[in-house]
Image (cartoon, rainbow, N blue to C red):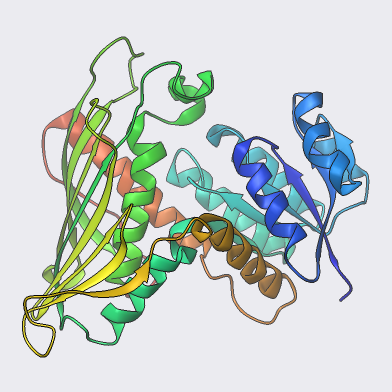
Length: 343
């Protein structure tokens, strides 16, 4: 195959990262950019010499692309992905895959029926500190995994991001479906196991719409008896983004500002720590480059999608369970998966 002609549907901040990744990825070329705001599409398309559109159907009909990145408000993913699949276009859809698991199934079926790739854009799988943590965990650096703790603090007040994030009909919820999706994703991926049940509580503070939670504490019960705790808050605490993997022989910590570090319980490094991957200013751009390269390999048929539709759907099932549990005040079981595990 010659260069993959890539279309960007949604040209906001994350769309810019995809465009930059394409410029640095051999065999991929952005040939079309779509955004509802013409000036936004132009700002990304013009430096690339790409065609400009304000509607995704016009981009599809132009015949200028082989594959697309869908980076739009969450509730719009399903219709755009199914339209692209019907036209025979391969798709990388940004996280969260959809606002509900039923829509994930619709997208998955449409792409399977059309014989095109559906790749879910969970960027945590490509961030160098997370990759280093995954490698260390899978090679037994801390022994069998016992538990995971993840904590994120962020500003989720109106005005902190585009208005559609505060419309649950479009976003699917509040801080958890937006920020918490990253936490659910990396917990499941690093642990390599599906979630069986969740227990959660949510708070709705300040001047936010109904359905826009500002804070969530969730307990995930995974296969093999592993437990994960996720805390996501929009209190005005100092910014925090920290994940800790606890094993029988030590722990791995991944935190913004430091990267990934190994803390063994015994051996030569006892009482100290080893840097697995220091944080770098290039981590995010590199992750987008590596993700796009993996998508390109899937489009060329050289490997399966690194993040599958089944996996993306399971992340949404967990989020649905968190919302259901916090509303009902009780533990919620999750659907059985198609596969035995996520390992």
